[in-house]
Length: 429
Image 1 (spheres, rainbow, N blue to C red):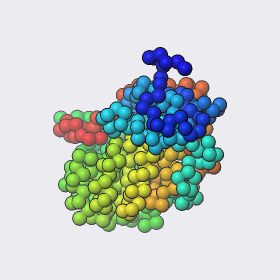
Image 2 (image 1 turned 180 degrees about the vertical axis):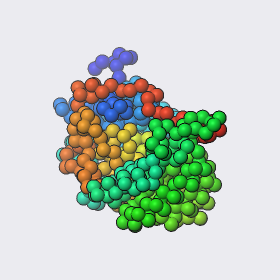
Image 3 (image 1 turned 45 degrees about the vertical axis):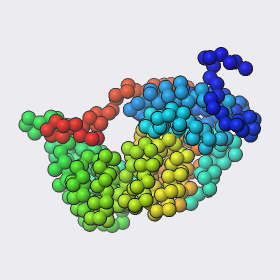
C-alpha cells in the first residue's frame, strides 16, 4: 500500500473499520456544472466495487469553489478506505474533524458526502432511498409553484395558470411601485424601479411593501376564492415590529404559510408574533445548525421547518430534524430553488415521501439542459413531484455533458444579496 505523505489515507477510522462489507471508498471528488447558469456542486464517491458510485448535492452556489476545495482537500482524505455503509459514523466523525462545526461551506461539503453515501446504500440494496427511510407515506408529493407579477392582476393570472395545470399551492410575490422587492418584477413593467430623487436605484422600500402585499392577497382571495392555498415569502426584510403588523394584516386571507417573516437575528420576536396572529409561519432557510430549530419547535413557534437540506449537512440531519419536529406537530417544507441540484431535489423528494409530517415542497422545474446533464431528474406533473423506483436517489450525472456547462463566476447573479434601503443602508436580502 502506498504510504507516502501525499497519498490520501483514512484518518481516525473506527475500531470496527476492517469488519463489515468488503466494499471500500476509493475516490471522492467535487464536480461543478451550471446548465442553468447557476453553479451546482455535486460530490461523487467511487468504490472498490466496479461501477458502484454515489452522488450527492453540495450546492452553495455563492461559494461553490470553497465547497469543492473542502471536499477535495479535507473530506476526501478521511474517506478513502472507509466502508460506505457506515453513514452515521462518517457523518458524525466528519462533522467534528474540523473542530469548529457548522457553517454553510462545511455543511454543504458534508451534505455532498452524506447524500452520496445514501445513494450508494440504496444502489447496494437495490432500493430507492425513500424505501430505506421506511417507505412512502404518500404516492406523490404536492409542490408549490412561484407566481409573480407587476401588479395584483398579473399575479392573479399567473396563479390561475398554475391552478389550471393542477397546482393547489402557489407562492405569490408582487412588484412594489418605485422599488424592487424579492421574487417579483419591477412594478409598472420597468426593467428597474425608478428611484426617488436623491435615493439609490434598485432600493427596497418597506413602507410601500407593507401597503401593497395585504392589498395583493385581498385581491387574490376576492377573485380566486378559498380553493387555492396561497403562500408568500418576506425574505427576512422587515423590522420585527413591521413583521408583526404584516402577519396580523394577512391573517384574514388564510395563507398556507408566511415564509421567513423574521431574520435569524430577530427570532426572539417569534413569541410576540405567535401571540398576535394565527398566520402559519415557515422559518429556517438560512439555518446551518439543526439545533437552531430546537427552541422554535419545542415551543411551537413555527408551523414548518424550512431549511436548505444541504446547508444543514445533508439527508441524515434533515431526517432526524423531521422526526423531532413531528413530535411537536411541526411539518416540513424543504427549500427547493434552482440552486439545489436535481440530486438535492431527489433527496428532498425521498424525505417528503417518507415523513408523516410532510407539509409542502417547493418546486423548481429544470430546463432541458439540466435534465440531460442529470438523467433521472425528478418529474413535476399535475402539481406534484413523482418518485421513481430507481435504486438510490435515482439521479445520475453525465460528466461529459456537464463539462459543456462550466461553473459561472463566483459573484454572478447575486445582486439581490446586496439590497439597500432608500437611504442607502445595506438591507438583509
